Structures are given as structure tokens and as C-alpha cells.
Length: 516
Image (tube, rainbow, N blue to C red; front, top):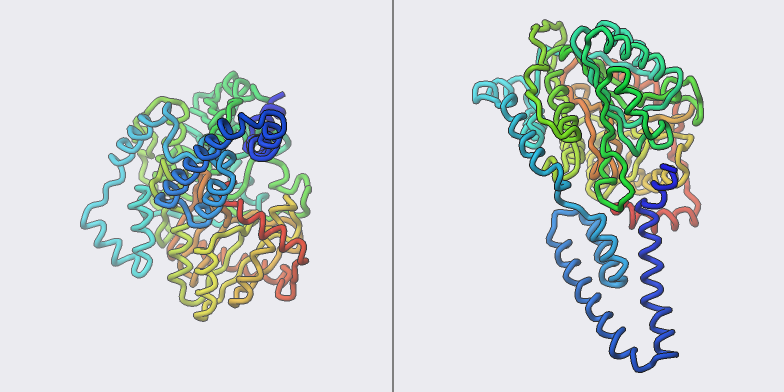
């Protein structure tokens, strides 16, 4: 029933209804009235047509003067000017630049609570400028946009496969003494989740505070609708992120795509991995699943605690004191370098398109190379131009995407991006063994990003995401080694040519991707 309701009240259903209404009002209704009631034609339909046309122009002017990406402005302008009824209906329901009323006040309170713990002194800033050298601006942007500080005294361990990642995660879960916070886009019942749930249940029963937050739409086909009640009965504090309601609303477009775990404020995990069997190759729906993550130990975990509580408290409608979840015990680490876990989300939460700007900053500042893995490559002109410009100025730009698709349409859209990039000198590879889901960027041996942020519109504009920016950390060497191994087994797509009919379909579909 829940699956049917999701489909019934989905954006696609609403778009189809709007198209039908547009056809009825624009074509069928005028013909019927003109044929059977000609007198009414001039008195009813002409004024309505004028009203909708004027409203279409008004909405178009509003969009052009907004901060919406140019690609999005273009398609909205076309719809509003040429199909005003359709455009106005879709715009009214789905274009949201303000938070839900229920959350608005709490968002402000969360920001104020966050600011108590992130202030950076002038002395710290000067020290950061010295230590971070040319990378200082990148970290400073994240601080100004998200209030997430850069930290030293942090170990980062690179985990190159789901099997390696979850072995490390499960071991740390067993060591938890005070609390466990988990936030994932997808949880699916199976061997992996059952083994984790057993540990969480035992910990909750022994007095450890256990919280789980999962995305309600992300799990809609994976978990029963009342699964959160089952977890609550086991002693686990559970929140369904943006719980599905059978109403058409832009809030359904803002999903929690983050994947992270925090243990006792000392250890944190960030990755592209959801809690399901395919991510550890227990099942193989798309061949071998390649994913990566990092284990963070030390001061930088504080950022993750803040990010988690920000969203948990907004969803739970109760503001907490964040500091009681910071580690009281100072963890002395041996790791060098600097680490900044950071978040991204809808414009009304962060006031900036953080994810895309961080990627652009890294690409634009690259001197030797930029290597990228992403499951989806559906990017706007800004990212296309940045990658192309980097390649044309002599930077070694390489991108690895999957060879086996999880979604056929998205796979073709990804491949349709190759041509323009390759023309500029970007090298494209496809992971030959199956599906590569890791989202990471490595640049010039000394700076890298790993997290949940895909190179597509949904990740870059709509979803709540998380990632870790690292500078001169030891784990970047392991990341580079993994990249080189991937290049050896991946397929060089330099001779790839997409069929003309597929290119045409993708060209049309790409017009609408900023709306999706």
C-alpha cells in the first residue's frame, strides 16, 4: 500500500496529471467549447488563457532573478512561457526555497546551537593559513558555508571495499560505551543489517544510547512502514527522515543521502555504503560492488557529532545540547595532516550549494592531476567547463564510472557526458567488474574528498549529503594506490560512441534533469 501511495503522490504522477490538464485545457476544451458552445469561447477561454500567460511571465521573471542554476532557469522558463498551466502547477508544488513551516524555527535554533562550538579565533586562523598553505581557501570556504572546522590530531584510515569497511565498523560498534549514532539513506533487512542490529540491540540493553536515522523514501521498498516502531521497542531511538506523507510536496525531494556512524564522539565512519547486503557483495545484482569509506579517529569527529544532531533534532523536533556528546577524553593520534568532515543540503538549510562549490574549488586549483570516481556523471555547464579547462591546461583529469548500470536511463545519461569531456582531454574509464559506487576525488597527492556526494543534480542540489575533506593525510596514499589499481582493471572509453538515437534521447532528458 505504501509503495502504491508513493507512486500515486510522486512527482512523476503529478507531472503526468499536469500534462493531461494542459492538453485538456489547451486543446480539447477549446475545441469542444468552440464546436458546441461558441458563445462561451470568447467569454471564458480567452480570458483564462491571458491570465495563465501573464502568470507564466511573472513566474519566469521570478525564476530568472533567483539564484537557481542557469540550466534549471532555462527549462522552467520554457515551461512557464509555452505551457503556463503545466509550468505553474509544477512550480507551485515543487520549487521550494523555504524550509517546511514545522522546521523553520528549529533550523534557526540549530544554527545558534552549532555556532557555540565552532568559533575560530584569529590566532587559529593564522595558524591554519600557515599549515594549510594553498589549501587554506578550500577549508575556509567550508567553514564559512557550513561552520565545520578543520582539525588536526586526527587519524584517517582508508577502507577500500565494503567488506573491509564493515569489518572495521562492526568491530568499533562492539567497543561502544556511551553512544552509537547511525545515519543512512538505505537500510535493508539481510545478513549485514541483521548482524549490526544484533549489536545495536545488545548495546541498547546494556545502557548505551543508540540512535538510528534512515531515509523513509530511501527504504520504502526495503523496510516495513512500521519498522521504526520495531527499533524503538528494542530500545533504539529511531527517526525516519522526512517521513513519507501522501501529499505532493517539495519536502519529498530533499532526502537524507548521508551514510555515517559516530561512536562515543571518538570514532566516526563516512562512506558511500548503505546498510544492505549488496554493498558487501553478499548479493550481486550489478556484478562486483566497489565502494569506499574512511574511519576517522580524533578531533574531527566533533564535526560529525554536530552534523548528526543538526538533522536528528530537526526531525525529532527537539533541540539538544550538542556538547554533551563531544568526547570528554582527549584522543591523541599519530596521524598527520588536516581533516574536515562537512555537510551539504538544500539551499534553505545551508544558504550555499556547498557540494558543487567544493568540487569546483578543487578542480580549478588542481596543478598536476584530478582523479574522480562517481556512479553517476550528470553535471551542469560549470562542472563540465571546470573539468574541461583543467584538462586543457595540462592537468591529468580522469573519471571512473560503472560499466554495469543500476539504472539504465541514468547510465545512458552518464555516458552522454563523455563526449564533451573527452574532446577536452578528460580520460573516462568504466569499472569492468561491475558497479562502482564510491564518491571520491584525489588531487595532486595532497588533497582529497570522500563521502556520499555524486556528480549529479540530486546530490549537488537537493539531498542532504556528507563528505570529508583531507589535506596531507596518510590515507591519501592508500587512496591513490586504490585509484591506480582501478585504472588497471577498468575499461578505457576513449573509443566509445553512443548511438545517435540514444544521444537524442539524452539531450532531451538532460533538459529536465535540473527539475528532478
